[in-house]
Length: 74
Image (cartoon, rainbow, N blue to C red; front, side, top):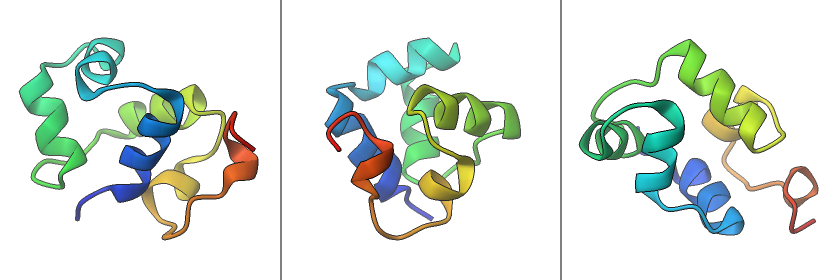
C-alpha cells in the first residue's frame, strides 16, 4: 500500500524523501520503497514519523484524508 498521507505530510512540511531517510537513519532507496508500499515501516519508524508530524500512527498510516488540524498548516 502506497502511503499518500505520509507524502502529503512531508510536502506540507517541505521535507523531501532524502531528509526523511536521514531522520530515520535509513537509505533513501529504503525510504522510497517504504513510502511506496514495497517494504513495511517498522513500528518504531511509524511512531517516529507520527511524532515528527505531531500526530498519531493511525492518522498517517490508516486514514485516507489529510487532517490539516494536525499539521502546522492548520
